[in-house]
Image (cartoon, rainbow, N blue to C red; front, side):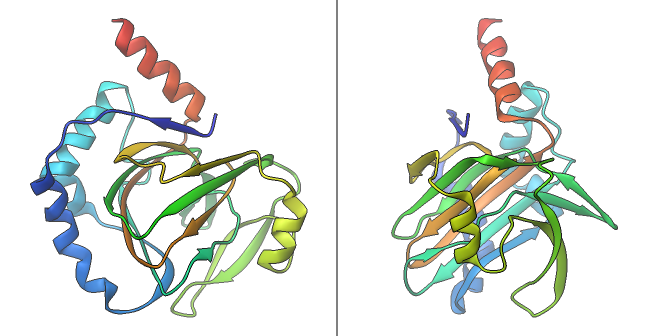
Length: 209
């Protein structure tokens, strides 16, 4: 299982509140940025998301609330990866995320591979550079370049165009990547150390009761 769409009660004013906070960051071009902000959980949309996640026993404290930002000039295929949580000198798995689309650029799609997931022995700790040129440690797909990593993974297993309408749970413990179109894209995100399959079972049991 790679993606699970869900229905979520919200209004445009709550979404616009988040957009207005971050829209100034799109004065520059960058491929990918993730920022964590404690105040996001206190916004009207953040409170609604927290209450919904609590209703299926999901704790927002594992990663807290984050914002994914992209703003590129042309279609860009991102580095294939698995999501990890950097905690002091330890790397922990982010097996799934709840993502809420705040602002959409032209289009984006996600792709997944079953070949490598969290815990695979072929994954190696690798030092990357962020957009500010500062090093950070993460778990890397084998290969020295993006092209080599795609070649190592081979044919993809699942692809989904514009998956967030406006929200859903995504599998982030399997190898995955994004194809992002030109223009700004803004996503509110909360990560969990729980598989997408388990989240599906929790939602199913909640509906039954």
